[in-house]
Each structure stands twice: as C-alpha cells, then as structure tokens.
Length: 629
Image 1: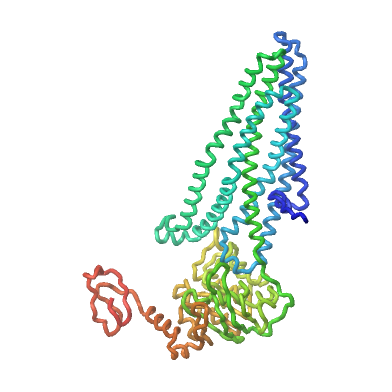
Image 2: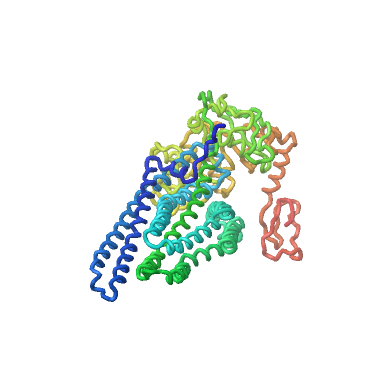
C-alpha cells in the first residue's frame, strides 16, 4: 500500500515563503542552541570558584584560580550574547523575507480575483489577513523558533550536567521543568487550540467592524450617537472580551499559576532533596558546592521556560494565521480567456443569464435576457433586491454567470482578455472613494498617462470647474487627510471625471445620484449627458425621473425581467413600472409646510392643521400637494 504524502507542518509551510533565506532560520536556531549552552559557562565557573573556596576554607588566599574562572565567566557570557545576536540576525532576515513574500503573494493573488470578491469581504478583514497575519508569523520565525532551540538545548545541557555534577540534584531541577511542560501542554492543547482559532477570528471580526465604524463616524457625530449605535462593533468587542476573560479565568488560571509557582520556587524541589541526601554524603564540601551550583543555575530555568511558553503561543497564532492566508490564496481566480476574442462593437447582450451568490438559497438573477444596442442607453429599475446591481456587475466580470452568457460586441465576456474588457467598461457607483493624492492623480487613476490638459478637460465635462476653482493649488491640491475635503456630490462628479477621461465605450452607472443634493444632482445630470454621448450606457436608478429619457427600460423583480419598453410604453401597460411611477410621483409631491395652518397648493388648500392632533404651532409637518398637513 502506498504511503500517503503527509502535509508539512505549519512552520515548514511558513518557511516556504522565506524562499532562498529559509536556511538562515536553521542556522539561527543552531546558533541559538549554542548560545544557550555557552550561557551555562558562567554557572560552571561559579561552581569551580565555590568548589575551590570550600576546599581551602578558611585559607581563602590559597584559592589561586578564582580570577581565571572570573575571566572565563565574563568571556563565556559575552560569547553567548554575541552568538545569540548572530542567531537573531539570521532568523530576522528569514522572517522579514517570509512576511514580505506572504504580503506580496496574497496581494498578487487578490489582483486576479473577481472584483465581486471584495464586495463580500470587507477591507478590514482582508487587511487583517494580509498585514496582521504576516506580522504574527514574523514573531514566531524571528524570536520564538530560536528560543525553542535554546530551550531544547537547555534541557539537553541539564541532562549533561547531571553526569558532571550530582544527578540527584539535577533530577530535582528537571522535575520542576517536567511540571512546567505539563502545564504548558494543558493550556496549549485541546481547548487551548480551539481558543486560538476563536481568538484570531475575533481579531479579524473586530478589524472588519472597526473599519466600518471609523468610516461611519460622521453619521454617528451628526446624530449624536455612541458606539452602541454600531451594534456590530460593540458586539465584536464584547464577544472578544468575554471570550478572553473566560479562557484566562477558567481554563488557564490553574495551570499557569502552578507552572509559575513551580518554576520560580524551584528551590522547593532542591532543598528537600539536599536535606535527604546530605546525611549520607562522605564528601560534604563537594556536595555543598554541587547544591550551590544547582541553586544558582535554577535562575536560568524560568527564563528558558518562559521563552518556550511564548513560543507555543506564537506557534498557535502562526498556524491559525497561515490557515487564513491559505484560505485567501484558495479563493478561485477569475478564469482567463483561453482564446481571446475582440468585441466587434460596444453592444451588450444578456442571454438567459442566471447567477447565484455563494451560499445564497435563491438566484440573484434567474434566466434574464435583454439587449443593449451599441450607443444606446438602457435603464435597469425595479424594487430593491431585484438584481439590478448584480446584472450590471456581470458586464465587467465582477462575477461570472452561473449559466447563460453576457456578451460585449457579440463576444462572451469570458472570452475577452480581462485587461481589454476593463478598458471597454467604465463604471460609477453610488459610493466612490478618492485616494489621498492630488485631484489630478485621483482623476488619472483611470488613465495614468493623461496630461494636465486632459485632466482639466475631463473635470470641465464632469461639471467640476467650481471644485477646481476653490482648491488652493487647483488640480494639484492634495485631497484627504492633511489636504482638502470634498462633499459627497463633489466626489461623485470627480468619479464621473475619471469615467470621462477613461473614454471607455461602455459606461455602467449604479445609482450615481443616490446621495447627491439637488444642486449637485443637476450638475451630475449634465455630466451624464457628456459622458453618455456616443457610448453604450447601462444605468441603474431608483429615482425614476433620471431614466425617463432612456432608449429602453428593463424592469427587474426578484431576479427576473418583469417587463421592458420605453417610459411611455410601460406607463400604458399599467404594470409594475406604472405602479412604481405612480408611487414615485406621490413621493416627490410631499413637502415640508408649517403646522400652523399653511398647506400645499391644491383643492384642500383651505384645510387646517389642528394642534390638538399633536402638532405644535409653528412646528414643521409633512404635507402633500393636494392634501392637508
């Protein structure tokens, strides 16, 4: 029977990221072991001093070799420090390369993942995996592995010293070490391993929710809320706190107290052993010197065992970090086109498209078919959750369809080179972020080789002249921390400038006016007109007034095409779109009026607002045109 290939351990897998510097880790571990053995030298020299002094007592002047032992002790101590320094240099070089390669490989892998992957994985979560996990492995490789090698060398050295001095007293020291190791194993196995997974998961969760909380601080401040308004963030902190306190208090307290007591009270083992053995000793002076050696040497044991404890913790954290990195690396990359084809034009066609999100119970799109002729504007509307954004995201291959096909220029997008496809499509979302760079660099993100004149032209077409005029250094003004800040509507217009300068033949607009005030919305609409000229436009909107002039409107409901047609055609049919339009007209007719009796114009203009209904005089009330407040 063929033997199964055993998967390498976590440390071996981590060292694979070190590449050519991997051998330095082993060199560092060997040097650390040598350094630990050299550190025994001063204690041995002290034993020789004690032995000689006891042998000549009380004629201390006859102990002539004491000075030489002292210099040997100093030399061995310095040598131990120097060798340990070299050991850490080697392991750090390997650890830094490991962390660097881990970050590079994970980031490189992310570059090949579908863009939709980032909508289901928060930036805080990914940051924790890429940066936090790499940092946690650095501690293990740079410090803990050489310390483990030193701890092993300490135990081996103690076994050797048993034969050189008094094995019975040495065995008493080793008993304390055995108790300490048993306590450590109790904390780090079984429930301890499970806790480390939960601990790392809690850190990742706190990073993700914390990032979202920081981004939402403006909302919290506007409405005078507290951290409790962000229940997810509060719950993540509470969960982490309770988990850590319960683990430390109920699981670790007893073994940790036991092992610390044993190590720091090692004389509790030595003194009884010495008292039992002393009466039977013929050479009491030599026995007392041996006891003095082990009593002094016992100070090394807690330090070495503490290093071993930290190494065990770092090993568990690194194993979990490696598992998270492997999970990220296992995410399926966007399949590359085997035989790349070139779109004939900028038309878009959905052909019996179905799409199901991972883990979802029902499809987000269910046998959807419609066409967007080259140069036309098609609007996707419908109730929330109908599949509008999902459909738009399939055009630039944020995801690949589950069945059916999405074609650009008559070619399935899966058969178009990914770079060429991205050059074909520009998109503007309802929430856009600007980089901490100049305004010009933010616009150039879509076209890095653009000149200042081209940037200015794109900003002009995007109705951003007022933004450029108010910035102290114009397009070369820094945005973000330490620079200028733009409003939400202004950010949308800069995002439109990006799309304009990209000059892609297909444009996807996903709720681009969702959070704009009336003034910015008017400017954005004018920018849309410039952006849409001669291009194929797929527009997603909840404000139906923005899609009235579309060449075709596709109404999506629960992932299916409910109806298609122009604005006037759909109104005549009296279907879902007509009902949505009626609701929209009713909604936009509502306005704020005075509760003191002022009402909207209409047949009920003389209606009164009575304060007895709970509206105080002079307080604002909601009114509808043709109705009463």
